[in-house]
Image (cartoon, rainbow, N blue to C red):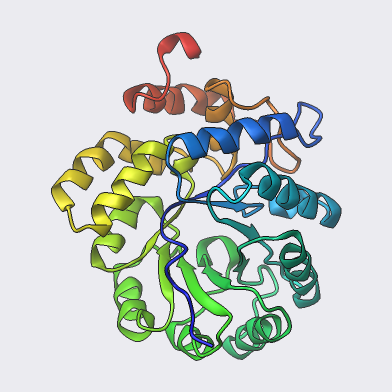
Amino acid sequence: MSKDLSEFKGSMVAIATPMNTDGSLDFNSLERLVEFHIENKTDVIIAVGTTGESATLSMREHSEVIQKTISIVNKRIPVIAGTGANSTSEALELTHQSKALGADACLLVTPYYNKPTQNGLYQHYSKIANEVNIPQILYNVPGRTSVDMYPDTVLKLCEHDNIIGIKEASGDIDRSKELLDKCSDKISIFSGDDKTAMRDILQGFKGNISVTANICPREMHDVCRLASAGSKDEAEIINKKIEILHDDLFIESNPIPVKWALNKMNLIDKGIRLPLTWLDEKYQKILGKSLISAGIITENDL
């Protein structure tokens, strides 16, 4: 079976999971967010990734958010389900469920905390790819998981028909070049680092799985589109307008700043799950100023 690498590209938002102030799921706001993204040309939605607070949702809630997202999108753009876990059996169950719910693909973060070896990573991903016939995207984010999946491990996994891409979030230019050299003819390579996404797409990455796109989806779509076309100068003009957000949306742990910003944009309520907390007051002025500078809100919204 030949891989179809054409469906997933461009600005791919790792969408926040809206919650009410008591921490319960808010599906009315989820519908508002999805429509906001479709209206503003987001190319792909990733449900229940790290930005979607996957680590604090129960298995039932995890599948419920994926199902609701798929239903609201209604095949207008692709939906990728975040199904990674630090337990292979849990990741396998979530991937099975997401296929049954109708997800177009799954995104699987490297198992966090338990620090598997490269062989352990290979076996983890191979088992899931062997048992669930759905397109799967690997996700390497060593700064968050404390495990780094090396390009040679990715190269071995490329041979599996169900593994069609990797989200590389190290931000390292040498890593980007090595992945392109070794793997770009076998899988799609996506940036997972908004700050370096334009650079990586200009080099050959197929898109960006983005945090910043939660806040400015149209701009991120245009940056990805222009960079993919090789229009560096035009992409840089747009990216320069929003580049401060690539930093300030991580002023505290993601998705704390994203949820604060979305609340100021009147898109979601003040809901977040412990152990995550609402954005500290000492950072609110900094992020508010950045949002105003980027043209996302006005001073009246603060």
